Length: 122
Image 1 (cartoon, rainbow, N blue to C red):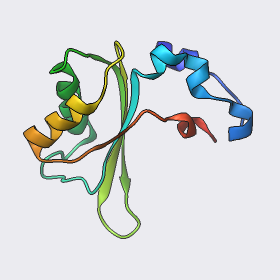
Image 2: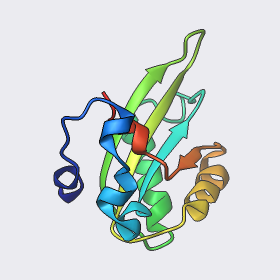
Image 3: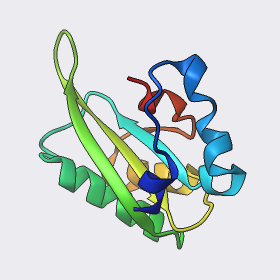
Image 4: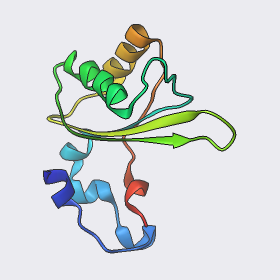
């Protein structure tokens, strides 16, 4: 819950919000990622919790634990759905091992980003 307490803002625009990276500090920022699984295979991951569980396993394989996660499922305009998962790790960790684990174990290609500034704009 520390992450949620670290960012408490009523600002309404990107110009006013400043840099989320600066607010958290460089070390903590690199332990936070946004993962997107486009055109999600619902036979493989029928729920948000099951997709999140696979990502938790992927980071655990490289000795990083997820302290917090939040997952949403969003419909594409034309067809299909995708998952957005934000994670906060217990330490700094590169995401490449997690991505490779998901590809090798489940045959999926998830996109990772450490740029999450836009997530908090109203």
